[in-house]
Amino acid sequence: MHAMGLTDADIEKPFVAVMGPYGELTPCNLHVAALMKTVKTGIAEAGGLGRESGMAMVADSLSMNHQGMKFSLITRELMADSIEAVVRGHSFDALVGIAGCDKSLPGVLMGMVRCNVPSVFLYGGSALPGRFRGRDVTIMDVYESVGAVLAGTLSDSDLNELEHCAVPTLGSCPGQFTANTMAMVAETLGFALPGGATMPAVHSARDGLARASGGTVMRILQTGSPLPRDLVTYKSLENACAIVAATGGSTNAVLHIPAIAHEAGVKFDVDNVSAVMARVPLLADMKPGGRFVAKDLHAIGGVRVVLKELLDAGYLHGDTLNVSGGTLAEHLDGAHAPDGDIVRACAMALAPSGGLVVLKGNLCAEGALLKVAGLKTLAFSGTSKVFEDEESCARAVRLGEVKAGMVVIIRNEGPRGGPGMREMLGVTALIYGQGLGEKVALVTDGRFSGATRGLCIGHVSPEAAVGGNLALVHDGDVIDIDARSGTMTLNVSDEELSDRRKRWVPQRVPKGGLLEKYAQCVGSASLGAVTHSGAVSWPQDIIDGR
Image (cartoon, rainbow, N blue to C red; front, side):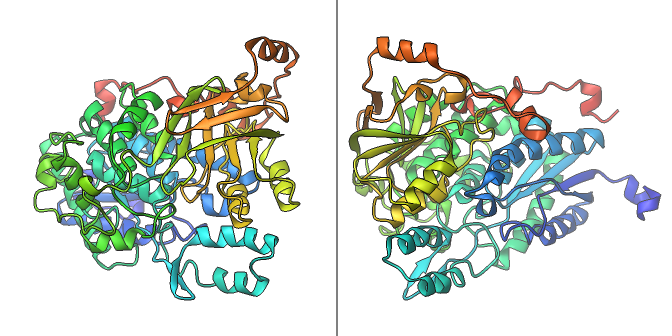
C-alpha cells in the first residue's frame, strides 16, 4: 500500500471500492472514469478512502447485429463476478458502483447484492437526443433508416446526415431503452440517490450527485444500514416492475429483475413480473413507443413524478427503503404531479396495463415477452418462416424474402443456444424500416433491444437449444398471437409435435473459452438467465475482513 503512495493515516481509513466499466468502447461509459474520481472526492470528504477498479464490458450498441452480441449478456455476469472478486478479495468495507451501458446496470446491482456490503449505485446518465430536420432522433432512428434505405424510401446521403447527428453527446441511449429502464429500476429499488435515473450525462449536476453518492456510502458504513439485501425485497421488486410497466420500459428488465432477486435469495420469476405488468397502467409517453426521451422526463421532475402518481393510486409499496435514508414514500414527498403530456395521471393513462405482456402457450410454456407500448396490433395470426440464427434471417429481410403475414422464427439464440441470448435490433429495425413493422411478427428465444418496436416477441422459454417447442416449428405452421389474452399458440397437434421431437437433433455446445463456460451453467430466461444457484452466504469472518 505504501508503494501506491498511501500513508499510515490513509491505511487507517475505511476502504471503499469504486467500480465501473470505464473504457473507450462506447459513449455510454467514456465519462465513467471522471465520475469515479468525483465519487472518491465525496468519500474522502466523509473520511474514507476510495480505490478505483474497472471491469470488462461489451456495449450492446456496438456489438449489435454480429457475433459480438453473444458476449453482451455474458458481461452482466462478468461484472457481478468482478465486483465479488474485488470486494471480497481485497476485503473492502463498502462499494460505490457506476454503470452506463445496458448490461453494466444489472451487473453492478447484482454484484452489490451478492456482496451485501454498504453500497450505493450511480448511473452515468443518458445522452442528449440529436436533432434531424426538426425532430429529436436517437440511435434507433439510425438503425431503422438502414431498412428505409434498403426499401428505397431514404437516400444514402440522408442516412449519412442522420448518422452524424443522432448521438451528439456522451451517455447512454436517451429513450426508454434498457439503460434508462434499469436506471429507473435502481432508483425505485432504493440503490441510487434521487434524480440520477433521468439526469443527462452532460449535466454538471451529475458531479454533485457523484460526490453525494460517495458521502452516502460512508453514512451507510457508519450506521450499518440499509444494506443491499435490505433493499431487495418482494415489495421492492414489485415496485421495480411497476416503474417498468408505467414507463413502457425495455423487455430486458424482465430478465434482469429476477436475476437481481436471485442474488438476494428472493424467488421472483417471469410470472411475478407478469402479475405486476397486468395491473399497472402505462403513464409515460417515452420512446421507442412514444414521443419523449429521458431529458424531457427529467425536466418535469424525473422518475419521482411517475412513482408518486403510482404511489398515490395504490400501485406501489411505500414502506420500502432507500440509500438516501427513509422509505420510498418519504423519498417521494413533494414530487411534482404529472404534466399530462410526458406523464399522464392514472385516470388518464395511455393504456390500462403496462407496456410489457408475458405470453404463455404451447410455444412458450415458461413464457415469452411482447412490448406492447405504442403497438396498434395486439392480435396476429400468420404462417411461420423459420431461421436457425439471426444472420440468416437478416439476409432474408435484406433480400425482401420476409413478407406481410409471416411469423418470422429465429431460434437457437437463447441463453444456452446462442450462447449469450443476442439482441435482434438489427433485424427488427430492418423490418420496421421497410414498412413491415406490424405486418409481420418476429418470435425468438433471443432478446430484443430496448429500442425495438413492432410485433416482436422474445425470451421464448424453454428455448430451442434445450428442446423447447420452438425447436419443432416448421415453415408454414400457423401461429396465433394474442396480447389481450396473453397467449401464443402453435397450431400443431401434440401427436405431430411428438413425432417431430423424435427426429430433433440438439445443437452442439461451442467448445473453448467463455461461450462454452457460459452455455454449461446458464439457466432459463424465465428465471433471469442466471449462472449460479442463489444468494451467496459468506462466513462472518470473511464479511468482517478478518
